[in-house]
Image (cartoon, rainbow, N blue to C red; front, top):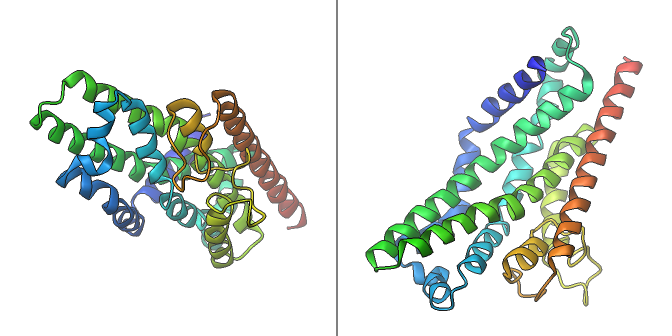
Length: 267
């Protein structure tokens, strides 16, 4: 168990220190954080308080972060396993008591945790900026606390399932595909599988296999889809969608472990 958590800590530290990841996430965060600093009404805070729908406001805010940020997350997670191949780290780990499934799971948890850290930091900045502006405008503190709780709940229900799903495939697929090829294909998939209208283009968008978070946003927060394509989903559909996404992630990790075992037998 200590070896497993050692992999998690090592992978997290290595991934979270990449300045390029922070720069990319910071650029993607500007359209969301800047309006909160200048005028929170542009983010819908004023309307949310007027209609007592702070929960919906928080869910919609987190959902908007899933428009572009998961693309960055998937891209930065994609080279972590090939990096071990290049540096011979995997062979070094074979000399330790660490089991292969613990290596895969530890690496997975570490890279996903590193990828969501900038997102959590962005949500924290949004909460701080909106709270500061709200207090200055005389918004009751209780309403701001509700809004911050909604943002945290949105991170758990909307952001985490998306990154857990994306992270599993961003580890598994580069084991058989060149990293750059996967990154290009993944970027195209993110828009195709989340934001295209299935009435006009065959797509997974609008199904339980939609990782953008639209099901959780609608089912748990009564928030709208970013593109407005889907108006509502029930809380049961949200739970089913999260379960399907996590099951697919588990299947991808299992396939990766079996592929690495097959490689080891061939070596």
